Image (tube, rainbow, N blue to C red; front, side, top):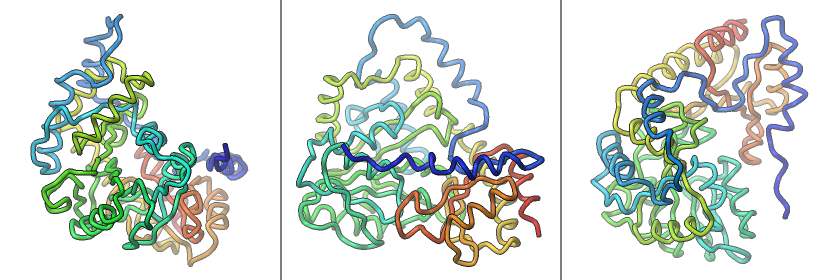
Length: 360
């Protein structure tokens, strides 16, 4: 099986250089949370620590009902049937295995954004399908079995409005493709309001062929818990459930309890969002003063930045000389060769340090 090299391995030399800075490295290369897990979630995890039996693949009904309630309160999604909710062991495993779970393989196309999360391509290759990168607004070719949408985007932070997403859904339906909308950054909006593919303004009032993929890693600091879910077309979710039962893809019962608590409380999500907003408000002007242009970045955890249009790896080296580590745009597609992705996932102190180092 031919898979691309793991992208972050190629950063090793630049990471070593950044670590030699007298004040240590400020690592803004990966979007891993650094803030505490809210106490209410930690308490919920412990309430079912004595769980000797196997949990159900479908998840407890309380969790699925909490998902439905959170989507309605936070994103205006009409109430879904809890049966059409399926917990996943984080969102990455679903992204990686979705083409396989859908039965795609050689001869099938998986359409992904031109600039996108690397695991979309990996998932297609694991299934033996062919990944095809689509430019903005480009319809998928015949033979496409799955179309990935991602708004807010990783890495660019670009937000597509309801009309743009509706067109993408219509184009996918025209070739008979399933649509999977990666909505992991939906709760982190700055200068534009993201919308879910689950809204009637996007899907025309029908969930047929649609799935929304969500993660609690960013909004609730649960990357270490591996907590996500997928919902949408009841028939598609039911088919995923059957395969996952056979494959043993089961979320641990304590994590289900933690997720239920997280999805039932909106205050900690708003608090975490404000932390990221404050870090963005500090780092963005520092980048601009240092000669960077920040494109898109209307939402999400990243600043999609270019330094006078220079090669991404040259920018990575320039930042490493200042003890800052970022990710080159080429990790996300060939057209990212003039940009770097700079994450907001560092402590307030380290973000302030990065801003100081960028100041001319």
